[in-house]
Image (cartoon, rainbow, N blue to C red):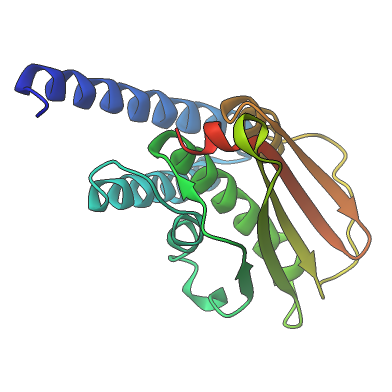
Amino acid sequence: MVDVDTRMRELEHRFRNILTIARSLVSQSLRSAKSLDEARATIDQRLEALGGATEQLLRHDWKAAPLREVAQNALAHFTLYKDKVRFDGPLVAVGPHAAMTLTLAFHELMTNAIKYGALSSMAGAIDLTWKEIGSDDRAEVWLRWLEHGGPPVVKPEREGFGTRLTCTATGRSLQGAAQLDFEPSGVVWTLRAPLAAIHL
């Protein structure tokens, strides 16, 4: 049985992690926004995603949750597009740290898909698929966000916060590598990370 002091230290550590993430989201949102109104809206959306991830972790007593549930929860508040995203993959347990990271990445990808990508068109859709590769201590998770049916894709002239979050920050946080490709037929985001890191 976990004693009270240990439990309190765990809660303090988790709270500090969440606060650090929130500060980073606010800082980066302010830095990249073109106006105060845009910054306010972006911050609200990103903090809502962070709050949703926290609520899910609390429901699971801060233990692992299935990847499908993590993804669905991350996109749940995009109610107008709930039938536009298809999920397919085996049961993969996602730990609290990875759940936070993936939730923010999924939220960012979804926001960009609505503004500029596949979901800016009535015919657009997204396939989110994943699988396990390898076994034992070399096992990895391969995950792909594939947009299709939208307008022709044009690669942005500069790398924004969303790209840094979904690629650099996500890859580093999960001890793997994430890549965003602007294919003419649709944006493709891929992630490969050790299964052990996904379980954290």
